Image (cartoon, rainbow, N blue to C red):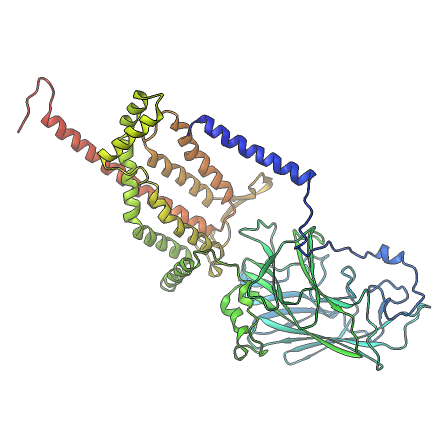
Length: 604
Protein backbone atom coordinates (compact mmCIF):
# COMPACT_ATOMS: atom_id res chain seq x y z
CA UNK A 1 0.00 0.00 0.00
CA UNK A 2 1.34 3.46 -0.94
CA UNK A 3 0.50 6.96 0.26
CA UNK A 4 -2.35 7.24 -2.25
CA UNK A 5 -3.96 4.09 -0.83
CA UNK A 6 -3.71 5.40 2.74
CA UNK A 7 -5.15 8.74 1.62
CA UNK A 8 -8.03 6.91 -0.09
CA UNK A 9 -8.82 4.99 3.11
CA UNK A 10 -8.78 8.18 5.22
CA UNK A 11 -11.01 10.02 2.75
CA UNK A 12 -13.44 7.07 2.60
CA UNK A 13 -13.77 7.03 6.38
CA UNK A 14 -14.27 10.80 6.38
CA UNK A 15 -16.98 10.65 3.68
CA UNK A 16 -18.82 7.82 5.45
CA UNK A 17 -18.68 9.65 8.80
CA UNK A 18 -19.95 12.92 7.36
CA UNK A 19 -22.65 11.09 5.40
CA UNK A 20 -23.90 9.21 8.45
CA UNK A 21 -23.91 12.42 10.50
CA UNK A 22 -26.01 14.22 7.90
CA UNK A 23 -28.40 11.28 7.61
CA UNK A 24 -28.94 10.87 11.36
CA UNK A 25 -29.28 14.63 11.87
CA UNK A 26 -31.57 15.63 9.01
CA UNK A 27 -33.08 12.38 7.76
CA UNK A 28 -33.89 10.32 10.86
CA UNK A 29 -35.59 7.08 9.74
CA UNK A 30 -39.03 6.13 10.98
CA UNK A 31 -38.86 3.26 13.52
CA UNK A 32 -39.69 -0.14 12.05
CA UNK A 33 -43.23 -1.34 12.58
CA UNK A 34 -41.79 -4.54 14.06
CA UNK A 35 -40.37 -2.68 17.05
CA UNK A 36 -43.05 -2.11 19.69
CA UNK A 37 -41.93 1.05 21.43
CA UNK A 38 -43.25 4.39 22.49
CA UNK A 39 -42.13 7.39 24.46
CA UNK A 40 -43.48 7.63 27.97
CA UNK A 41 -45.76 10.64 28.18
CA UNK A 42 -45.40 11.82 31.77
CA UNK A 43 -48.42 13.08 33.61
CA UNK A 44 -47.07 16.07 35.45
CA UNK A 45 -48.70 17.79 38.37
CA UNK A 46 -49.43 20.81 36.13
CA UNK A 47 -51.28 18.55 33.70
CA UNK A 48 -53.36 17.05 36.47
CA UNK A 49 -54.18 20.42 37.96
CA UNK A 50 -55.54 21.60 34.61
CA UNK A 51 -58.07 18.76 34.39
CA UNK A 52 -61.74 19.46 34.95
CA UNK A 53 -63.27 17.87 38.08
CA UNK A 54 -64.98 14.59 37.29
CA UNK A 55 -68.78 14.85 37.00
CA UNK A 56 -69.59 11.20 36.36
CA UNK A 57 -68.96 7.85 37.98
CA UNK A 58 -65.72 7.72 39.95
CA UNK A 59 -64.96 4.05 39.28
CA UNK A 60 -63.26 4.64 35.93
CA UNK A 61 -62.01 8.20 36.42
CA UNK A 62 -59.61 8.19 39.36
CA UNK A 63 -56.42 10.17 38.74
CA UNK A 64 -52.83 9.73 39.81
CA UNK A 65 -51.94 9.72 43.47
CA UNK A 66 -51.62 13.11 45.14
CA UNK A 67 -53.67 15.22 42.69
CA UNK A 68 -56.37 15.96 45.31
CA UNK A 69 -58.94 16.14 42.52
CA UNK A 70 -62.28 14.32 42.65
CA UNK A 71 -61.72 10.70 41.73
CA UNK A 72 -58.11 10.65 42.92
CA UNK A 73 -56.61 8.20 45.38
CA UNK A 74 -56.02 9.06 49.05
CA UNK A 75 -54.87 7.13 52.12
CA UNK A 76 -57.57 6.85 54.81
CA UNK A 77 -56.18 4.23 57.22
CA UNK A 78 -54.16 4.68 60.36
CA UNK A 79 -50.76 6.08 59.50
CA UNK A 80 -47.74 3.89 59.94
CA UNK A 81 -44.17 4.72 60.87
CA UNK A 82 -42.05 6.93 58.63
CA UNK A 83 -38.73 5.56 59.95
CA UNK A 84 -36.80 3.17 57.67
CA UNK A 85 -35.72 -0.17 59.14
CA UNK A 86 -33.29 -2.95 58.22
CA UNK A 87 -34.12 -6.56 57.39
CA UNK A 88 -31.46 -9.21 56.77
CA UNK A 89 -31.23 -12.67 55.24
CA UNK A 90 -28.17 -14.79 54.51
CA UNK A 91 -27.68 -13.00 51.21
CA UNK A 92 -29.48 -9.64 51.61
CA UNK A 93 -29.24 -6.61 53.87
CA UNK A 94 -32.29 -4.50 53.00
CA UNK A 95 -33.45 -1.11 54.19
CA UNK A 96 -37.23 -0.83 53.92
CA UNK A 97 -39.00 2.52 53.91
CA UNK A 98 -42.59 2.46 55.27
CA UNK A 99 -43.18 5.65 53.28
CA UNK A 100 -44.45 3.96 50.14
CA UNK A 101 -43.54 0.45 51.39
CA UNK A 102 -40.49 0.41 49.13
CA UNK A 103 -36.79 -0.40 49.42
CA UNK A 104 -34.20 2.37 49.81
CA UNK A 105 -31.11 0.13 50.08
CA UNK A 106 -30.47 -3.39 48.80
CA UNK A 107 -27.06 -4.86 49.66
CA UNK A 108 -25.60 -8.25 48.76
CA UNK A 109 -23.73 -9.56 51.80
CA UNK A 110 -21.79 -12.25 49.91
CA UNK A 111 -20.23 -9.79 47.44
CA UNK A 112 -18.03 -6.88 48.41
CA UNK A 113 -17.30 -3.49 46.91
CA UNK A 114 -14.30 -1.75 48.51
CA UNK A 115 -14.63 -4.08 51.48
CA UNK A 116 -18.35 -3.41 51.99
CA UNK A 117 -21.42 -5.35 50.78
CA UNK A 118 -22.33 -4.43 47.20
CA UNK A 119 -25.18 -1.92 46.96
CA UNK A 120 -27.47 -3.29 44.27
CA UNK A 121 -29.74 -0.23 44.31
CA UNK A 122 -27.94 2.74 42.76
CA UNK A 123 -29.87 5.90 43.63
CA UNK A 124 -29.35 9.52 44.57
CA UNK A 125 -31.04 11.60 47.24
CA UNK A 126 -33.57 12.76 44.65
CA UNK A 127 -34.35 9.26 43.39
CA UNK A 128 -37.43 7.21 44.20
CA UNK A 129 -37.13 4.03 46.22
CA UNK A 130 -37.43 0.68 44.47
CA UNK A 131 -40.67 -1.36 44.26
CA UNK A 132 -43.01 1.59 44.78
CA UNK A 133 -46.57 1.61 43.45
CA UNK A 134 -48.23 4.16 41.20
CA UNK A 135 -51.97 4.67 40.69
CA UNK A 136 -53.14 3.39 37.30
CA UNK A 137 -50.39 3.64 34.71
CA UNK A 138 -49.00 6.89 36.08
CA UNK A 139 -45.20 6.92 36.41
CA UNK A 140 -44.64 10.32 38.01
CA UNK A 141 -46.19 10.30 41.50
CA UNK A 142 -45.63 7.11 43.51
CA UNK A 143 -47.87 6.28 46.45
CA UNK A 144 -45.93 7.81 49.32
CA UNK A 145 -48.39 7.10 52.14
CA UNK A 146 -46.92 5.76 55.38
CA UNK A 147 -47.76 2.06 55.57
CA UNK A 148 -48.11 0.06 58.74
CA UNK A 149 -45.80 -2.94 58.79
CA UNK A 150 -45.04 -6.15 60.64
CA UNK A 151 -42.24 -8.73 60.33
CA UNK A 152 -43.21 -12.38 60.51
CA UNK A 153 -40.32 -14.78 60.01
CA UNK A 154 -39.09 -14.33 56.45
CA UNK A 155 -41.97 -12.00 55.55
CA UNK A 156 -42.23 -8.20 55.72
CA UNK A 157 -45.88 -7.09 55.43
CA UNK A 158 -47.05 -3.54 54.71
CA UNK A 159 -50.72 -2.50 54.95
CA UNK A 160 -52.71 0.69 54.31
CA UNK A 161 -56.30 1.64 53.44
CA UNK A 162 -57.13 3.82 50.45
CA UNK A 163 -60.24 5.38 48.95
CA UNK A 164 -61.28 7.74 46.16
CA UNK A 165 -62.22 11.37 46.68
CA UNK A 166 -65.87 12.04 45.96
CA UNK A 167 -67.09 14.82 43.69
CA UNK A 168 -67.35 17.26 46.57
CA UNK A 169 -63.76 16.54 47.57
CA UNK A 170 -64.63 14.33 50.53
CA UNK A 171 -63.40 10.78 51.09
CA UNK A 172 -65.60 8.04 49.69
CA UNK A 173 -67.29 5.78 52.18
CA UNK A 174 -66.02 2.47 50.82
CA UNK A 175 -62.25 2.19 51.30
CA UNK A 176 -60.18 -0.81 50.18
CA UNK A 177 -57.07 -2.35 51.73
CA UNK A 178 -53.74 -2.51 49.92
CA UNK A 179 -51.15 -5.00 51.23
CA UNK A 180 -47.59 -5.50 50.03
CA UNK A 181 -45.87 -8.65 51.30
CA UNK A 182 -42.17 -9.31 50.72
CA UNK A 183 -41.16 -12.97 51.17
CA UNK A 184 -37.54 -14.14 51.25
CA UNK A 185 -35.95 -17.58 50.98
CA UNK A 186 -33.34 -19.09 53.25
CA UNK A 187 -30.57 -19.22 50.67
CA UNK A 188 -31.97 -17.49 47.61
CA UNK A 189 -31.23 -14.43 45.51
CA UNK A 190 -34.90 -14.68 44.55
CA UNK A 191 -37.65 -13.03 46.60
CA UNK A 192 -41.40 -12.70 46.19
CA UNK A 193 -43.62 -9.61 46.31
CA UNK A 194 -47.39 -10.11 46.68
CA UNK A 195 -49.69 -7.15 46.08
CA UNK A 196 -53.17 -7.77 47.50
CA UNK A 197 -56.22 -5.51 47.18
CA UNK A 198 -59.48 -6.12 49.07
CA UNK A 199 -62.58 -3.97 48.90
CA UNK A 200 -64.63 -3.25 52.04
CA UNK A 201 -67.81 -4.27 50.22
CA UNK A 202 -68.64 -6.95 47.66
CA UNK A 203 -67.84 -4.82 44.63
CA UNK A 204 -64.87 -4.52 42.30
CA UNK A 205 -61.94 -2.65 43.81
CA UNK A 206 -62.44 0.97 42.69
CA UNK A 207 -58.93 1.32 41.33
CA UNK A 208 -58.92 2.09 37.62
CA UNK A 209 -57.25 4.79 35.57
CA UNK A 210 -57.10 4.41 31.80
CA UNK A 211 -57.95 0.72 32.31
CA UNK A 212 -55.02 0.12 34.68
CA UNK A 213 -55.23 -0.57 38.40
CA UNK A 214 -51.64 0.17 39.44
CA UNK A 215 -48.04 0.16 38.25
CA UNK A 216 -45.22 -1.56 40.12
CA UNK A 217 -41.80 -0.04 39.47
CA UNK A 218 -38.19 -0.96 39.89
CA UNK A 219 -36.18 2.24 39.73
CA UNK A 220 -33.90 4.05 39.38
CA UNK A 221 -30.88 1.81 38.62
CA UNK A 222 -28.98 -1.34 39.60
CA UNK A 223 -25.57 -1.01 41.19
CA UNK A 224 -22.72 -0.93 41.77
CA UNK A 225 -22.47 2.83 41.26
CA UNK A 226 -20.77 4.25 38.18
CA UNK A 227 -19.85 7.59 36.67
CA UNK A 228 -20.39 6.58 33.04
CA UNK A 229 -21.29 3.61 30.85
CA UNK A 230 -19.30 2.60 27.77
CA UNK A 231 -21.59 -0.33 26.81
CA UNK A 232 -18.57 -2.61 26.66
CA UNK A 233 -16.63 -2.76 29.91
CA UNK A 234 -19.54 -1.30 31.93
CA UNK A 235 -23.16 -1.34 30.81
CA UNK A 236 -26.84 -1.72 31.65
CA UNK A 237 -28.97 -3.74 29.23
CA UNK A 238 -32.60 -4.78 29.07
CA UNK A 239 -33.51 -8.35 28.18
CA UNK A 240 -36.91 -10.01 27.89
CA UNK A 241 -37.97 -13.60 27.46
CA UNK A 242 -41.39 -14.11 25.94
CA UNK A 243 -43.66 -16.93 27.04
CA UNK A 244 -42.99 -20.03 24.97
CA UNK A 245 -39.75 -18.68 23.54
CA UNK A 246 -36.44 -20.43 24.09
CA UNK A 247 -34.43 -17.27 23.47
CA UNK A 248 -34.02 -13.93 25.14
CA UNK A 249 -34.35 -10.60 23.34
CA UNK A 250 -32.15 -7.59 23.94
CA UNK A 251 -34.37 -4.53 23.93
CA UNK A 252 -33.29 -1.38 22.14
CA UNK A 253 -35.17 1.64 23.46
CA UNK A 254 -36.67 4.20 21.11
CA UNK A 255 -36.64 7.78 22.45
CA UNK A 256 -35.67 6.44 25.86
CA UNK A 257 -38.63 4.07 26.28
CA UNK A 258 -40.04 0.71 25.22
CA UNK A 259 -43.51 -0.69 25.90
CA UNK A 260 -44.97 -4.11 25.22
CA UNK A 261 -48.11 -6.02 26.20
CA UNK A 262 -46.78 -9.38 25.06
CA UNK A 263 -46.85 -12.11 27.74
CA UNK A 264 -43.35 -12.30 29.20
CA UNK A 265 -41.70 -15.03 31.25
CA UNK A 266 -39.37 -12.39 32.67
CA UNK A 267 -37.81 -9.01 32.01
CA UNK A 268 -34.30 -8.23 33.20
CA UNK A 269 -32.08 -5.23 33.80
CA UNK A 270 -28.58 -6.65 33.42
CA UNK A 271 -25.18 -5.23 34.28
CA UNK A 272 -21.76 -6.74 33.78
CA UNK A 273 -21.75 -8.56 37.12
CA UNK A 274 -25.25 -8.20 38.65
CA UNK A 275 -28.83 -8.21 37.46
CA UNK A 276 -32.41 -7.52 38.52
CA UNK A 277 -34.91 -9.85 36.83
CA UNK A 278 -38.67 -9.42 37.27
CA UNK A 279 -40.83 -12.55 36.91
CA UNK A 280 -44.55 -11.60 36.82
CA UNK A 281 -47.44 -14.01 37.27
CA UNK A 282 -49.81 -14.99 34.45
CA UNK A 283 -51.66 -11.64 34.42
CA UNK A 284 -51.27 -9.74 31.16
CA UNK A 285 -49.16 -6.84 32.46
CA UNK A 286 -47.99 -4.02 30.24
CA UNK A 287 -44.21 -3.68 30.60
CA UNK A 288 -42.51 -0.33 30.10
CA UNK A 289 -38.73 0.13 30.12
CA UNK A 290 -37.15 3.58 30.35
CA UNK A 291 -33.75 5.22 30.38
CA UNK A 292 -32.98 8.83 31.29
CA UNK A 293 -30.50 10.96 33.21
CA UNK A 294 -32.79 12.62 35.76
CA UNK A 295 -32.57 12.52 39.56
CA UNK A 296 -28.84 13.17 39.76
CA UNK A 297 -27.65 9.85 38.23
CA UNK A 298 -25.47 9.34 35.15
CA UNK A 299 -28.15 6.98 33.85
CA UNK A 300 -31.47 5.69 35.17
CA UNK A 301 -32.77 2.33 33.90
CA UNK A 302 -36.25 1.48 35.16
CA UNK A 303 -38.82 -1.30 34.79
CA UNK A 304 -42.56 -0.61 35.12
CA UNK A 305 -45.24 -3.34 35.26
CA UNK A 306 -48.77 -1.97 34.81
CA UNK A 307 -51.68 -4.16 35.90
CA UNK A 308 -55.05 -4.12 34.10
CA UNK A 309 -58.12 -2.98 36.04
CA UNK A 310 -59.25 -5.34 38.80
CA UNK A 311 -62.72 -6.83 38.24
CA UNK A 312 -63.22 -8.46 41.63
CA UNK A 313 -63.63 -7.41 45.28
CA UNK A 314 -60.26 -8.99 46.20
CA UNK A 315 -57.17 -9.77 44.19
CA UNK A 316 -53.65 -11.03 44.89
CA UNK A 317 -50.86 -10.54 42.33
CA UNK A 318 -47.52 -12.29 42.68
CA UNK A 319 -44.21 -10.99 41.40
CA UNK A 320 -40.84 -12.61 41.89
CA UNK A 321 -37.50 -10.87 41.53
CA UNK A 322 -34.01 -12.23 41.13
CA UNK A 323 -31.57 -9.70 42.58
CA UNK A 324 -28.06 -11.05 42.54
CA UNK A 325 -24.88 -11.96 40.69
CA UNK A 326 -24.59 -12.89 37.04
CA UNK A 327 -23.54 -16.44 37.89
CA UNK A 328 -25.08 -19.51 36.33
CA UNK A 329 -24.85 -21.47 39.58
CA UNK A 330 -27.05 -18.94 41.39
CA UNK A 331 -29.57 -18.67 38.54
CA UNK A 332 -29.97 -22.25 37.35
CA UNK A 333 -31.41 -23.46 40.69
CA UNK A 334 -34.74 -21.90 39.64
CA UNK A 335 -35.11 -24.52 36.93
CA UNK A 336 -35.56 -27.24 39.56
CA UNK A 337 -38.27 -26.82 42.21
CA UNK A 338 -36.33 -28.95 44.70
CA UNK A 339 -33.33 -26.62 44.65
CA UNK A 340 -34.98 -23.35 45.79
CA UNK A 341 -37.16 -22.12 48.63
CA UNK A 342 -40.07 -21.07 46.41
CA UNK A 343 -40.59 -24.34 44.56
CA UNK A 344 -40.39 -22.63 41.18
CA UNK A 345 -39.07 -24.38 38.10
CA UNK A 346 -38.05 -23.76 34.50
CA UNK A 347 -37.53 -19.99 34.89
CA UNK A 348 -34.37 -20.16 32.73
CA UNK A 349 -32.90 -17.07 34.37
CA UNK A 350 -29.42 -18.11 33.24
CA UNK A 351 -30.40 -16.99 29.74
CA UNK A 352 -29.99 -13.45 31.06
CA UNK A 353 -26.24 -14.11 31.17
CA UNK A 354 -24.36 -12.33 28.42
CA UNK A 355 -23.88 -14.86 25.68
CA UNK A 356 -20.40 -16.03 24.91
CA UNK A 357 -19.08 -15.77 21.39
CA UNK A 358 -18.77 -18.76 19.07
CA UNK A 359 -15.62 -19.45 21.07
CA UNK A 360 -17.55 -20.01 24.28
CA UNK A 361 -16.11 -23.51 24.63
CA UNK A 362 -12.59 -22.06 24.53
CA UNK A 363 -13.54 -19.41 27.11
CA UNK A 364 -14.79 -22.18 29.38
CA UNK A 365 -11.54 -24.13 29.00
CA UNK A 366 -9.39 -21.08 29.75
CA UNK A 367 -11.58 -20.22 32.73
CA UNK A 368 -11.15 -23.74 34.11
CA UNK A 369 -7.38 -23.52 33.82
CA UNK A 370 -7.33 -20.04 35.38
CA UNK A 371 -9.44 -21.19 38.34
CA UNK A 372 -7.14 -24.21 38.76
CA UNK A 373 -4.12 -21.93 38.91
CA UNK A 374 -5.93 -19.74 41.44
CA UNK A 375 -6.55 -22.77 43.67
CA UNK A 376 -2.76 -23.30 43.74
CA UNK A 377 -1.69 -19.64 43.97
CA UNK A 378 -4.60 -17.51 45.27
CA UNK A 379 -3.85 -14.45 43.14
CA UNK A 380 -5.65 -14.03 39.83
CA UNK A 381 -2.97 -11.62 38.55
CA UNK A 382 -0.28 -14.28 38.97
CA UNK A 383 -2.70 -16.83 37.49
CA UNK A 384 -3.14 -14.67 34.38
CA UNK A 385 0.64 -14.35 33.97
CA UNK A 386 1.19 -18.12 34.34
CA UNK A 387 -1.68 -18.88 31.94
CA UNK A 388 -0.15 -16.45 29.43
CA UNK A 389 3.17 -18.33 29.70
CA UNK A 390 1.37 -21.63 29.14
CA UNK A 391 -0.44 -20.28 26.08
CA UNK A 392 2.81 -18.90 24.70
CA UNK A 393 4.43 -22.29 25.25
CA UNK A 394 1.63 -24.09 23.41
CA UNK A 395 1.80 -21.61 20.54
CA UNK A 396 5.60 -21.55 20.42
CA UNK A 397 6.01 -23.89 17.42
CA UNK A 398 3.56 -21.82 15.39
CA UNK A 399 4.93 -18.43 16.41
CA UNK A 400 8.49 -19.69 15.87
CA UNK A 401 7.69 -20.53 12.25
CA UNK A 402 6.06 -17.15 11.79
CA UNK A 403 9.04 -15.26 13.18
CA UNK A 404 11.50 -17.32 11.12
CA UNK A 405 9.45 -16.62 8.01
CA UNK A 406 9.50 -12.90 8.80
CA UNK A 407 13.24 -13.01 9.36
CA UNK A 408 13.78 -14.82 6.02
CA UNK A 409 11.66 -12.22 4.28
CA UNK A 410 13.93 -9.56 5.75
CA UNK A 411 16.99 -11.17 4.14
CA UNK A 412 15.24 -11.10 0.75
CA UNK A 413 14.47 -7.41 0.91
CA UNK A 414 17.47 -6.34 -1.28
CA UNK A 415 16.64 -8.93 -3.95
CA UNK A 416 12.97 -7.91 -3.92
CA UNK A 417 14.00 -4.28 -4.37
CA UNK A 418 16.21 -5.27 -7.31
CA UNK A 419 13.23 -6.94 -9.01
CA UNK A 420 11.12 -3.81 -8.56
CA UNK A 421 13.87 -1.63 -10.00
CA UNK A 422 14.43 -4.05 -12.90
CA UNK A 423 10.75 -4.12 -13.91
CA UNK A 424 9.38 -0.77 -12.65
CA UNK A 425 6.53 -0.60 -15.19
CA UNK A 426 5.61 -4.27 -15.35
CA UNK A 427 3.73 -5.42 -12.19
CA UNK A 428 2.95 -8.79 -13.78
CA UNK A 429 6.61 -9.52 -14.37
CA UNK A 430 7.41 -8.34 -10.84
CA UNK A 431 4.93 -10.85 -9.38
CA UNK A 432 6.33 -13.67 -11.53
CA UNK A 433 9.90 -12.93 -10.44
CA UNK A 434 8.81 -12.61 -6.79
CA UNK A 435 7.08 -16.00 -6.98
CA UNK A 436 10.20 -17.55 -8.48
CA UNK A 437 12.32 -16.02 -5.73
CA UNK A 438 9.98 -17.36 -2.98
CA UNK A 439 10.05 -20.82 -4.54
CA UNK A 440 13.82 -20.80 -4.87
CA UNK A 441 14.34 -19.70 -1.26
CA UNK A 442 11.53 -22.01 -0.01
CA UNK A 443 9.64 -19.16 1.66
CA UNK A 444 5.88 -18.81 2.08
CA UNK A 445 5.09 -15.07 1.93
CA UNK A 446 2.06 -15.74 4.15
CA UNK A 447 4.18 -17.61 6.69
CA UNK A 448 4.30 -14.61 9.01
CA UNK A 449 0.53 -14.09 8.88
CA UNK A 450 -0.86 -17.61 9.22
CA UNK A 451 0.39 -18.07 12.82
CA UNK A 452 -1.46 -14.87 13.74
CA UNK A 453 -4.68 -16.35 12.35
CA UNK A 454 -4.19 -19.42 14.54
CA UNK A 455 -3.62 -17.25 17.63
CA UNK A 456 -6.56 -14.97 16.89
CA UNK A 457 -9.29 -17.29 18.29
CA UNK A 458 -7.34 -17.61 21.56
CA UNK A 459 -7.02 -13.84 21.73
CA UNK A 460 -10.79 -13.39 21.24
CA UNK A 461 -11.61 -16.07 23.83
CA UNK A 462 -9.22 -14.55 26.36
CA UNK A 463 -10.73 -11.13 25.72
CA UNK A 464 -14.23 -12.47 26.44
CA UNK A 465 -13.04 -14.33 29.53
CA UNK A 466 -11.12 -11.51 31.20
CA UNK A 467 -13.70 -8.89 30.27
CA UNK A 468 -16.53 -10.62 32.17
CA UNK A 469 -15.00 -13.30 34.43
CA UNK A 470 -17.02 -12.72 37.64
CA UNK A 471 -14.28 -13.95 39.98
CA UNK A 472 -11.97 -11.16 38.79
CA UNK A 473 -14.32 -8.63 40.34
CA UNK A 474 -12.53 -7.19 43.36
CA UNK A 475 -9.54 -9.50 42.80
CA UNK A 476 -6.35 -7.74 43.90
CA UNK A 477 -3.06 -8.21 42.05
CA UNK A 478 -0.66 -5.53 43.34
CA UNK A 479 -1.79 -3.45 46.37
CA UNK A 480 -1.69 0.25 45.66
CA UNK A 481 -1.54 -0.23 41.91
CA UNK A 482 -3.94 -2.94 40.72
CA UNK A 483 -6.45 -3.54 43.54
CA UNK A 484 -9.17 -4.84 41.21
CA UNK A 485 -8.47 -6.81 38.03
CA UNK A 486 -12.00 -6.14 36.74
CA UNK A 487 -11.37 -2.38 36.61
CA UNK A 488 -8.76 -0.13 35.00
CA UNK A 489 -5.65 0.52 37.11
CA UNK A 490 -5.84 4.12 38.30
CA UNK A 491 -2.56 5.59 39.52
CA UNK A 492 -3.63 9.25 39.55
CA UNK A 493 -6.81 11.29 39.29
CA UNK A 494 -6.62 14.64 37.54
CA UNK A 495 -8.63 17.64 38.75
CA UNK A 496 -9.76 18.08 35.13
CA UNK A 497 -11.04 15.89 32.29
CA UNK A 498 -8.92 14.94 29.29
CA UNK A 499 -10.59 14.31 25.90
CA UNK A 500 -11.16 10.59 25.23
CA UNK A 501 -9.42 9.65 28.49
CA UNK A 502 -11.45 11.15 31.32
CA UNK A 503 -9.82 12.28 34.54
CA UNK A 504 -7.95 9.10 35.49
CA UNK A 505 -4.38 8.08 34.60
CA UNK A 506 -4.07 4.37 33.83
CA UNK A 507 -0.54 2.96 33.68
CA UNK A 508 -1.10 -0.51 32.18
CA UNK A 509 -2.46 0.79 28.81
CA UNK A 510 0.70 2.93 28.49
CA UNK A 511 2.95 -0.08 29.19
CA UNK A 512 0.94 -2.15 26.72
CA UNK A 513 1.18 0.51 23.97
CA UNK A 514 4.94 0.99 24.39
CA UNK A 515 5.53 -2.76 24.31
CA UNK A 516 3.35 -3.10 21.20
CA UNK A 517 5.27 -0.37 19.35
CA UNK A 518 8.62 -1.92 20.27
CA UNK A 519 7.42 -5.39 19.32
CA UNK A 520 6.32 -4.21 15.88
CA UNK A 521 9.59 -2.31 15.30
CA UNK A 522 11.82 -5.32 15.98
CA UNK A 523 9.47 -7.60 14.02
CA UNK A 524 9.61 -5.45 10.87
CA UNK A 525 13.36 -4.89 11.16
CA UNK A 526 14.61 -4.02 7.68
CA UNK A 527 12.12 -6.07 5.74
CA UNK A 528 10.45 -3.13 4.04
CA UNK A 529 11.67 -0.39 1.81
CA UNK A 530 10.48 2.26 -0.56
CA UNK A 531 6.74 3.06 -0.62
CA UNK A 532 5.99 0.41 2.01
CA UNK A 533 7.91 2.35 4.65
CA UNK A 534 5.07 4.84 5.14
CA UNK A 535 2.56 2.06 5.64
CA UNK A 536 4.85 0.28 8.08
CA UNK A 537 5.24 3.48 10.08
CA UNK A 538 1.48 3.72 10.31
CA UNK A 539 1.26 0.09 11.45
CA UNK A 540 4.07 0.62 13.96
CA UNK A 541 2.74 3.79 15.57
CA UNK A 542 -0.82 4.34 14.34
CA UNK A 543 -2.27 0.95 15.25
CA UNK A 544 -0.86 0.85 18.82
CA UNK A 545 -2.08 4.39 19.46
CA UNK A 546 -5.53 3.47 18.19
CA UNK A 547 -5.63 0.44 20.51
CA UNK A 548 -4.42 2.66 23.35
CA UNK A 549 -7.57 4.78 23.16
CA UNK A 550 -9.84 1.78 22.56
CA UNK A 551 -8.46 -0.18 25.52
CA UNK A 552 -7.73 2.70 27.87
CA UNK A 553 -10.69 1.87 30.11
CA UNK A 554 -10.45 -1.91 29.69
CA UNK A 555 -10.21 -4.15 32.79
CA UNK A 556 -6.65 -4.33 34.08
CA UNK A 557 -6.76 -8.15 33.94
CA UNK A 558 -7.21 -7.99 30.16
CA UNK A 559 -4.41 -5.44 29.66
CA UNK A 560 -2.16 -7.48 31.96
CA UNK A 561 -2.57 -10.52 29.69
CA UNK A 562 -1.81 -8.58 26.51
CA UNK A 563 1.17 -6.78 28.08
CA UNK A 564 2.72 -10.07 29.27
CA UNK A 565 2.07 -11.66 25.86
CA UNK A 566 3.78 -8.68 24.19
CA UNK A 567 6.77 -9.00 26.53
CA UNK A 568 7.14 -12.72 25.75
CA UNK A 569 6.84 -12.03 22.01
CA UNK A 570 9.54 -9.36 22.28
CA UNK A 571 11.99 -11.77 23.94
CA UNK A 572 11.18 -14.46 21.39
CA UNK A 573 11.63 -12.04 18.47
CA UNK A 574 14.93 -10.72 19.85
CA UNK A 575 16.18 -14.29 20.22
CA UNK A 576 15.04 -15.14 16.67
CA UNK A 577 16.69 -12.02 15.22
CA UNK A 578 19.92 -12.74 17.10
CA UNK A 579 19.90 -16.33 15.88
CA UNK A 580 19.37 -15.31 12.25
CA UNK A 581 22.08 -12.68 12.53
CA UNK A 582 24.51 -15.29 13.90
CA UNK A 583 23.61 -17.74 11.14
CA UNK A 584 24.06 -15.04 8.50
CA UNK A 585 27.49 -14.11 9.90
CA UNK A 586 28.56 -17.75 9.95
CA UNK A 587 27.38 -18.22 6.37
CA UNK A 588 29.27 -15.10 5.29
CA UNK A 589 32.42 -16.29 7.06
CA UNK A 590 32.24 -19.64 5.25
CA UNK A 591 31.71 -17.85 1.95
CA UNK A 592 34.74 -15.60 2.49
CA UNK A 593 36.78 -18.58 3.64
CA UNK A 594 36.03 -20.51 0.45
CA UNK A 595 36.01 -17.55 -1.94
CA UNK A 596 38.43 -14.91 -0.59
CA UNK A 597 38.50 -12.85 -3.79
CA UNK A 598 40.54 -12.51 -6.99
CA UNK A 599 43.91 -12.41 -5.17
CA UNK A 600 43.11 -15.10 -2.69
CA UNK A 601 43.30 -18.82 -2.94
CA UNK A 602 40.61 -21.34 -2.23
CA UNK A 603 41.29 -23.21 0.95
CA UNK A 604 40.43 -26.84 1.40
